[in-house]
Length: 439
Image (cartoon, rainbow, N blue to C red; front, top):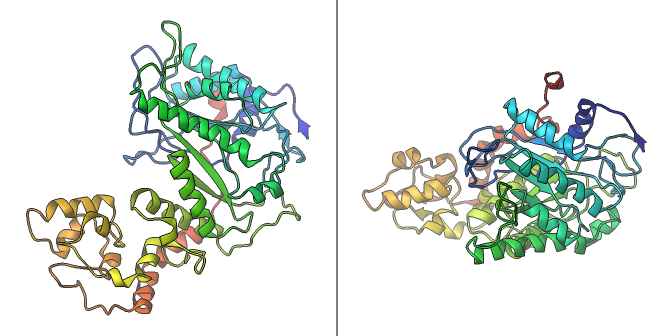
């Protein structure tokens, strides 16, 4: 480990923003807190995220590590203690300075703060708590804050941070306990799930009490907040261990059901350490696999699918040539074609080319008039997919035979252009800041 001392805040920023680039769990906040006119920033319902908010705006977070020093030696992590890389650590005051100065320059709309581990989890999370407390109560920053929790941190510190952050996340890291034992021997499933359960229980109490009496005690004028109002998320590394897509989806489904997570994020494994002992699974297109998992995750959260419907032990992995919804549809042609004027909302959601918005529009519009394919196109239905699975007033858009191979070939051809963009060269890059403007 090579630790650089007496570094400027700009030098630290360069090291710790680069060290944070593999952490992908940034997302829309879902927070409804506005500024009362006495502080800096706000966190409205449209959300803060690393790429795009729900209304289509591109927004940015200051995404940094508190420190890239770490006492753990996870084989997949660039910041593992056995790696010889430049090390740096911020102080709580430096975190406040960076956040406020970047916000004043309109570079960011919020903060995403993760960290390695100095000394022990409690010591590190205590420093993070100090930084957040100063941001909220001394600098009166009301913007969005997402904090990564460190497994093994005491419940008392998790609770204190939960009243200052908008969203918290504790990374599951790897899908199975065996994977953790092999690649992250300093971590265990119990230490990861315990704070996740604490956050879930705390938010459940918040909902049960209808926000009454569940605010952090504070002096007059101090920052007050609900407990983790934007909920929690987690991240899994995929491809470093040999789990199938079916196993990954089963774990994801259990996380949503048991911990009420807002999001599960998937990070395609990148062998940054070039470790010959790492039991990595070689995939022809890890980014495409990651993409398919995100599509399937969407089906679990918004389309009423179950993991066991999308995959099973006989077909344990997604067809990379088709999105999971199309793949399910061509394997279940007995449900199709669907009559647009009669099918209920939940059956419409299962039609490729129909989304939540277009399905709602169809259900609403057909009460007033008879729909045709031109009307469906205006509602946002993607007919190049949907045409194989729907009828309007008993007629199909084209004379299409209900044959699995025929439909699959045509859907794959229609999707090739999009796949070529995903399978192309991709790098892990994030927004870079002009450090000279801080001077």
